[in-house]
Amino acid sequence: MTALLAPTRPLVRAAVALLSCTVSVPLALTAAPAAAAPTGPAVYRVAPGASVQAALDAAVPGDVVELAAGRYPGSVTLATDGVTLRGQGAATVLVPDPADRSACARAGNGVCVTGSSDDQGVPVRTLSGVVVESLTVAGFPRNGIGAAVTDRLTVRRVAVHDNGMQGISVEMSTRTVLTDNEARDNGQAGIFVANWYDRKGGALETRGTEVSENRLSGNRIGLQLRRVRGLTVEANLAYGNCGGVFVVGDDGVPRAGALTVRDNVVRANNRYCPPIPRLDSVQGTGILLTGTEDVTVSGNQVSDHSGTSPMSGGVVLYPSVVGAPNTRATVTGNALRDNLPADLADRDPHGTGNAFTGNPCRTSEPTGLC
Image (cartoon, rainbow, N blue to C red):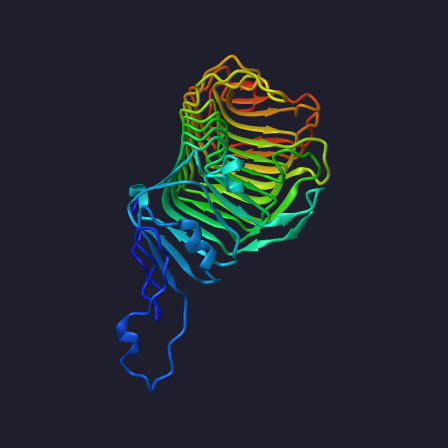
């Protein structure tokens, strides 16, 4: 990943090496006392050994907390609108600290981006405009980055690997941008976007969430979209997972769907993952639709899948765990090759209005879809 240079700002509040997070104004800004003091976003610079959380707690909307290269033990929480957490690419690494007793650490997450909701999961306060960029989050028991009840969250140029569940988890959030990230070797999904992880209910209208140009490998599922609507998945690379891209719905209303999966490269997702509650074994699945409506799958390259799971194949339509069918799926213009047992498979006996057009391939279930 590419290191990101600090922006030029009219006012810089520098944080802190070692164990303090002080705020200072450069001498150059004090040279003309007669002039009005300039205002603008601040940059808190944090070195290894300093408190990242103290800098985040001091930041106000528009501020940047910039981490130098190095290792930073412990979890951190962003809870202020419009704050950016920035590292120096792969050289800035957040890892667990067994002594950390913060709420984020107790939840098992590396970076928590948290609005709030009531006991029923209804949003109470939405956190807006947070950016997490150019750093690595690795080895946490649950999620590398766990976000919930946010709007306009951006996560870019971040590496998340070897986390126990999701690399990046985004729940109950709108207008999210997840781009140019690397998610590998996480216990569940590399990237997970859902209404809630632990609740059913109708699909969330994400209002234009974008998942683009990410690299997803070695996870159970590369990208999982669950009970969400109104988003685009574009130009991602998913390889070496048990399954590549899963779009998952059920019988909740509104239904999952009204989204587009386009121009992705999905290849050789042939690891074997054993069954878990509500999901059969997964192996050799490229793009899966289950319990969805109005999903468009177009322009993808899907190749080299092979497995014995009931969901194995290149592009597969399959009923949800509660029997909800796929409705009005459009699978068009995809390049499919060397997927077994089929390049295209419609295994949804109750699906209606699904269309397969212009997909170069050799094998399909039933025959005639290529």
